[in-house]
Every structure is written in C-alpha cells, then in structure tokens.
Length: 580
Image 1 (tube, rainbow, N blue to C red):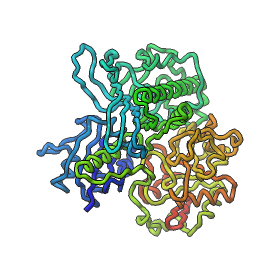
Image 2 (image 1 turned 135 degrees about the horizontal axis):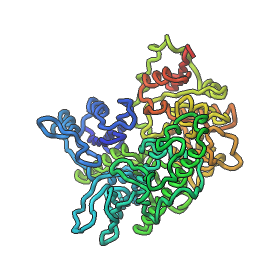
Image 3 (image 1 turned 180 degrees about the vertical axis):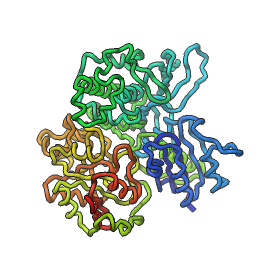
Image 4 (image 1 turned 90 degrees about the vertical axis):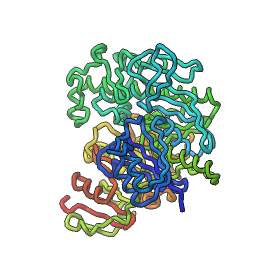
C-alpha cells in the first residue's frame, strides 16, 4: 500500500496537498471549492481528499497556533480531529511556527536542485520569540529569510529578519537575525497597495500600475539603505499597513481624499483626476523599483553568506513577475528558480515533501527527487462535463482546434475548460480566457468583459520553439509557469499590442505539446492562420472571483458575463450562448 502524506495550509490561500509515495497526487485551493477568493480553512478540500484517499501522516502549516480552531470536548484542532476520524493512527506533525520553512522547502523541492539557497520575502510569517536577554524587542514576525537547503531534508537558517509594529532595530551577535521596528519590503509594498485603494493582498494590481509611473520628486524617500522610512509607513503586523498621510500631506490625493477607489473605475472616470492618478502611478513605480532592488540585494547577501549559485525564491513577493525578470538580468550567472505557488498555499507542498523525505530517512526508503514539472495538479474534471444539461441555453457543436482558432481570429473571446485546474494564481490553458493578441484595443475589451481595472495587463502563451523570436528571455529557454514579465523584442513591438504592457513587456507562458497537447494544438492552429505563435491568455474568472474549478463554474461565469463561447477540447465541443 502507498504511503500518503497530507499537508494543510490553513490561512489565506488555504490549500491541501496530498503526496502518494512522494509524488503530488492532488493540490487543491479552498477558494476553488467555496468560490471565495483567497479563502482560508480548507475544510471542503480536506473532506474531498479524505473521501478518496487514506492518510498516513499529516503536516500542519500556518503562521501561528491560534490559526487552528479547536474542537469541542476533545480540544484538538479541527484539522487533526477531522483526519483522526478517518485514521485514528495518523501521525501528526505541526509546523505552524515554521512558516518560512514551508515556503523554502516548497521552492527547493520544486526546483529539482541538489542544493540551493532559498530566499523568502513575505508580509508576515510565523511569530518568533527568541527569548534573548535584552532590553530591546527580540520577537516578531518572519519577514525575510535565507535558508541553505540540501537533499534530502537539509534546512539551515542562514539569515532572518523579524518585523514588529514598534521597537528599535537590533542584530544578534552573529548578525544573522535582524529585529526591525521598521517596515519590511513586502509590508511597504502592501502599504502602498492599500494607499492605491486595493486590498493589501492584491499587490499584483499595484505591480501592473507601476509600469505607468516615473521618478517624482514629490514622493518622499521610501527606504534608507535596507530600512523602510518608519515615519512614512505604519505597519499592522501581521496584516497590512498604511501610509502616514498626516505627516506627508504632499501625498494627500486632492480630488478623492484618502480613498481613491475610483482607480477601479473606467479610464474615462480616472481621467477626471489626472494629478491624483499620476501621483499614485509614480509611487507605485517607486516602490516597485526600490523593493526589487532590495530583494536583489538579499540575493547578493545570500551568495556572499553561502557561496551558493542555485537560488530559489518564494513568499508572496515571489509572485512579482516584474521583479523576477529584474533578478535574471542583474544576476545572469546564477541558477534562479521562482516558486510558481509562492503564496501561502504553496507551503502545503513544501511541508508535505519535507515530511515525506523525513519518512524516507526513518524507513530507509530510496529517495528520489520529484521536481515540479506541471501545475495541472487539481482534480481532473473531464469526466464531469455534461453539456446536455445546458441545451436550452447554449448551442453545442463539434469543433476542431482550427475552428476555434478561426473564431479567435474573427475577434471572438473564447473561454477554455479542460482537465485539472492549474495550481497557483496563473491560468495556463486549462482554465483560461483567450483572445487575439494582435488586437489594438484588446486589453480594454477584455478588461471590460472581466470587470477588471483599466490598467491591468494580460499574458501571452507562446509555442516554446518560437519564444526567442519574440521575447528577450534573459538567458532562459522557457517560462512554462508564467513567472516572468519579459521584454518584447524591439522588432516585435506593435505586433501583439493587446498583451504588450505600457513598458513593452509581457508576462509569458511557453507551451510544449508534452505539457498541454490541447492548448499547444490551439496555439499552433492560430499560428497557421496568422503567422503569430501566441495567444492572449487570462484567467477564466471575472473580477473578484477565483479561477473556475468545475464545469458548472464555467457555465455560471458565462451566464454572468458577456462571454459567449466555451471550448471543451477533451470532448471537441464548443458551447455558444443562444441569447448572445
């Protein structure tokens, strides 16, 4: 019988990961089941796994013991108590006080490296109290960490920064741990995200906006060296932060006051507030520039401390694809791997694998590396497609990839539903909305259909064999998990305008037939019609919704929007709304 390890990440982006003999069998994010974006406490996901598989060992991730609600009478946390009801002998391992270790192990094991230095850049990890004899603050939340990792389960802390809402900066004797009463890198980014009118967890929106900005002398200094301007930033560890507008009145937005949610409105509305819009764009640009430079300095610190040239990155800031490309250019001689599930959900993968390798050592089981080769890690939903239920609402026809490619050439937006959903925040062709990348105003068209902010860019999926003909890959041969916003080659600027951002970059996914045959064939069919081996790709959801999980979710998304077409390649079917 197989040995199954289940890991649970209970906080925002709650997830479960099941390993069967060391290989990822399932990775499920709770938001996909509950339809509440970033949802926590993955109980529906847990029940699904327990109904299908036995569990031998359980790893509990998190950022603090208080995250585990307790059960009446037994006093167990709800996750342990639930799993025990299916297997009374389950072995339970709690890693709630090792949040950054979960990020580090996820990135390291996924990378396939034998050894690596793991750099974690996060808003707030586990709360750590070193109980040092000192008159200063010696406890706080993990913010930045460096780990030295080696197979099978070597994990050594090299450097760690702890953030707190007050207290002076203090270094330990060996200079490896910094207690910082200031604001860390990600917390500063979150604070400006809030200033721009978004939830702090939606920092990706600020990243998109930053490309519209430039240097602006009105904006105060954000960082002095590696320390944030504590007079400007007001942290709220563990969650969020804000700017001290009272001390910096030049940042007060004249037309909209402190609340600029109008940034979420149409471009026509934003145009009424040009001074405010420019200020927000410029401070977004400034935090992007400063923060990526500081993370680059952290990479250099890692190299200096360890001599390691294999670098892996995780933590929430790891999803910053603009910064990831910056590292590739700044450090051309290192081997860089950025975890594609760098948010908190990915800690369930890291800790499940860490526990598996511990079991291998205890039981003298042969250890085999299992690098991450695919993100199609969810439940395979192909067998659940029942198009006959929707004959009253949709016309249904059998199609080929060529037929669907022609629809896109004819300026139709086509959604696609296939197999298992992608893990992490990027849609990679199984739960995507597709369009023609050549369309001049394509970004505006699709942003309106999805209900997204006007400034947000879109990604491109390109046949891997053609990527160097279109993009500057900074030494990479592929970007299969869409973790880099790369430069469009000068001679290609203007040819794929709807996916080219204002700074002439594009977040790309390279696609091979081995990775996703249906998607590859569709892009190839589009290439044969147009000469362009690229499709405009965005996640199959509407603004504020998680990625669609089930076929019913896909149908509901069409019902609630102006989307007309749904392509189901596993059954060679195309559904079109009758009332469109």
